[in-house]
Image (cartoon, rainbow, N blue to C red; front, side):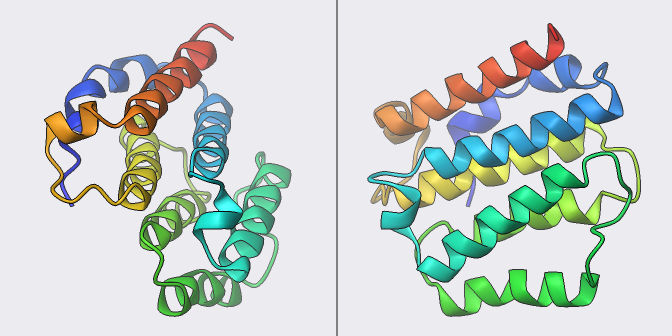
Length: 166
């Protein structure tokens, strides 16, 4: 799916993210994933299967604990198998994008995150929420008319501004 509004609004974000430290980029990425979880309507729990919510929350907690590490600290094959299995079992709109956001981050743990890695994670988070909004025909205008989409883009920008000023 092409997220027209997010692409336009985020165009300048890379320049703000690039100067962040490696840890700053990691914190920003995980904060963006957490923001995604709190942005679903009526709620994360109300939008996805319990196993998706449970695994995603556990994964986020693990990734936060391992923020200074270059590996997951758990069997990676099992972690990724369980992560990818979510989209096979939970067909809720947005599941694949949640999986993508977590996978993008976990895949990059062995190296320094780039601004484009962070933006890919943030884009997947936005797409998860956009998909869950079930907009019949996604256009920039339709996204602009959806208060949750507009609010999430503004909240993501606030995360970036806070990270840049930390």
